[in-house]
Structure formats: C-alpha cells, structure tokens
Length: 262
Image (cartoon, rainbow, N blue to C red; front, side, top):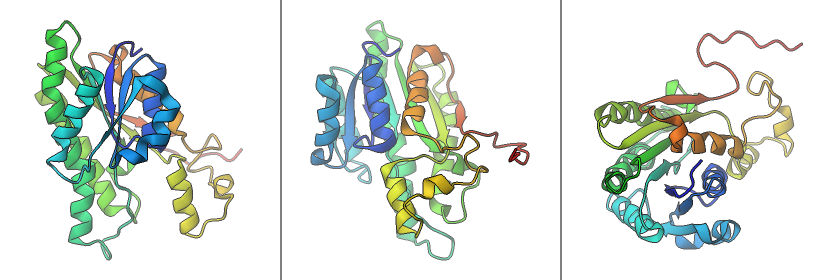
C-alpha cells in the first residue's frame, strides 16, 4: 500500500514506533526511524535492512524538529509521510504535577508534532508538484485524550491538544496536498508498558490478570495491530479523509454497556 513512499516515524527505536516503521517497510516504503540519539537506533535499523535510515534529535528542542525533517528527507530522497509517534507517558495527578512536568509533556506530545508537520509541509508540496499525491500525516494519540486515567492528567491533556490540532489542521489545510489524521490507541502491550507495570508492583504475569472490562478479546492491543492501521491512514486507500480521529480500541468509547462475562 505504500510502494515508493518515503516516511518519517518518530520515536521508532522500539514499541509502537518500531512496529509502524516495520509495517511501512513491509508495505513498500523507505522509512526514516527517529530516536533521540543515533545509538538508540542501531538494533532497530539492523532488523529492517537498507530501506530504513536513522535520524536523531531531541524533540523537546523546538530547533531540532526542522533538522529532523531535513535529515529524513535527505536520507530518503524526499518525504511524503510522517508518523508522529514519539511521546512521554509519565504519570501525574493534580496533586503531584509540576510546571516543569506539564511543560515537558506538552513539548514532546503536542508542540513537536505541530513543528514537524510545519517542517514537512514544503516536502509534501514538492512531492505533489512532482506528480505525487502530496503527503499524509498520522498522529498517534490516545483514548485518554477524551478524559484519561486519574494518574495521567498531563499526558491526557497533551493528547487532547494533539487531537484538536489534528482536526484543526485537517480543516485549515484541506485545500493543500496534505492529509492529517489521528489514531487514538487504547491500552497497548509494549516492553515499556510491561516494565512500567512491574515497577508499580504488578506481578510478572499481570497480562494474564487484565480484567475483561479492559480486554474483551482476552488481550490488550499489540503494536503490530496499531501498525496495520497506521499503514492504511498513510496510504491513498484512506483518501480523501483528513482531520479524522480514529478510535482504535476493542469497545466503543461512547454508549458502552457492561460487558457480559458469559
């Protein structure tokens, strides 16, 4: 679905980001994997082969975003896709959140995606001028954007900001060669999530104890499942949709009834 595509995926050294990068390569695209440090990408790049390149930069630095996009476009020979996956997932409540915590969360989760889109837009317009369809952006959001868990205050607020920005830009840029959509993902099994659960006192087999309320199918989401949806939203098969927020969860977020245990 992405044959000939040139796509930048942020936060791609592991977890959801790496799964998306791999799915893009498998779908025929050349991909630039981003991480804060180039050394963090060694293992990921070794698994993907020649169609994958590495770019590094600290997304908390507003000056770094344009360099990351420029480096990706140079490495790939252009750019027509962007996946804003990188995010902080630190816990916080109203009682313990600090100004520094909020600033760090919004810098990575809300500001950086907008600056990356800003830097990528000229490359998308260039791709369209050369006969392509332009560019597609997939923002990786969270169902926490609608309210959020009690201990994810700043994170939830930052993902809500990203969700509004997705809809705003989808509307504002509707006449230009760019589509911007968001996937709000649910609870996902990554290595980071596993380690977080252990650090909070959960047993090694915590995954087997997840209540059916949160995993009706018996398992929370896998990164590979999210990656398949990201490929669709990057591809022309999802055109002309833009400014859309897709809820990737096992149950409806609105009007949900009690799950039967039978």
